[in-house]
Image (cartoon, rainbow, N blue to C red; front, side, top):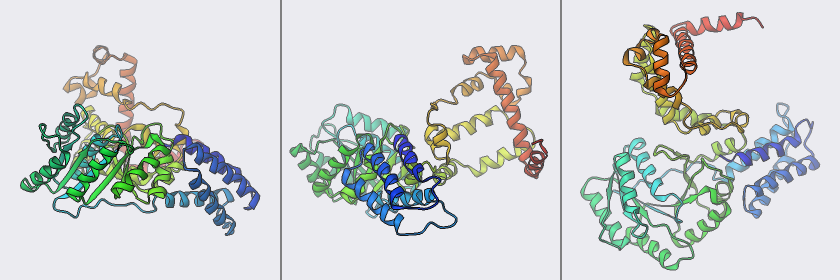
Amino acid sequence: MFNNLSDKLDKALHVLKGHGSITEVNVAETLKEVRRALLDADVNFKIAKEFTVRVKEKALGQDVLTTLQPGQLMVKLVKDELTELMGGDAEGINLSGNPSVILMSGLQGSGKTTFSGKLANYLKNKKTKKPLLVACDVYRPAAIDQLHVVGDQIGVEVFSDRGNTDPVAISKAGIAHAKANGHNVVIIDTAGRLAVDEAMMNEISDIHKAIQPQETLFVVDSMTGQDAVNTAKAFNDILNFDGVILTKLDGDTRGGAAISIKSVVNKPIKFIGTGEKMEAIDVFYPSRMADRILGMGDVVSLVERAQEQFDEEEARKLQKKIAKNQFGFDDFLKQIQQIKKMGNMKDLVGMIPGAGKMMKDIDIDDDAFKGIEAIIHSMTPEERSNPSVINASRKKRIGKGSGTSVQEVNQLLKQFTQMSKMMKMMQGGGGKRMMQMMQNMPK
């Protein structure tokens, strides 16, 4: 996410490293590189220029604190301005209606249908709502089928009327169905349209007037850069939407749309899509995104994702198993599943301060656990619960069954044993003993 922009900003801000004071000359040199980095990320020229002017005014208008070096101060100023440019504070979603009606709009191929499902899943699991998805894309082949597949996947009902080609009538019928069946949120998935297509733009305007939604969201593919911002402005002139959703932020995103869109349309980014899974949806926090762009990571989001997967009852059971030395491969498999639910691996690594920069040239496969899972699934129930029974012939069978080698099976068993010992040590006062051991290790 924003790797190219992060690298260029990092190089630009290194200009001030080692300087004892901030001067007009070294600030101008730094901000010239910052502006170039923003333009390369497809940020609007006018916005990039105004951004660097504001940072320059703030940089020259204050003394460097004794605890801060000039480079550190510039990073802080750039971070604060980036946060402000992207919206300042996180914006919530308006769910005041009964039912709350959310109208999804955007270009063809921007990911509206998939994101409608992600939003429904988010509202169902995080906000304890009972959403209804309404299929109003009557033009794209198999669009209705796609929404039904998404609905089945997340356990959310989908309303459709295959014989009807009037999206206004379908949306009204969907809201009526929601009222009659106890749904408190209605998400209306509309057809993708081009801003230059007058008939299609009139159609979505008619839908908007007919249903009066609490939220009108514009879905935009973040990989389209400045084009996305121009399209958002054209849609906003007609719909006056309430917020923006940025999809495909896990791809090769330059960052221009995320940085520019709030400034151009004066509407907040409300959610971002960070992967293909239905759980890959995050509330957009400008300050956290600014941290990530500047390579500072995003520990808060990482902790939040971990907490979402944390089950207190399961944790207590696991603690008892570790204490009794009964931690087996089935338990290990559960831990892997929880990590996988947190998101794609590269995204998670990017949330650790400094790790994103260290791992930028390393390809982290989303199937990083595939080999481990294959080995575990090739074990018998007895082998998974009691790994000590795995002898040479069993290792050979496990390796063959998992498509791996005996060496890889041995490596996993060794790592598992070491991890089990460490977890045992951390039980009850073990953490203290472990610290003492580490302190006594030869330097």
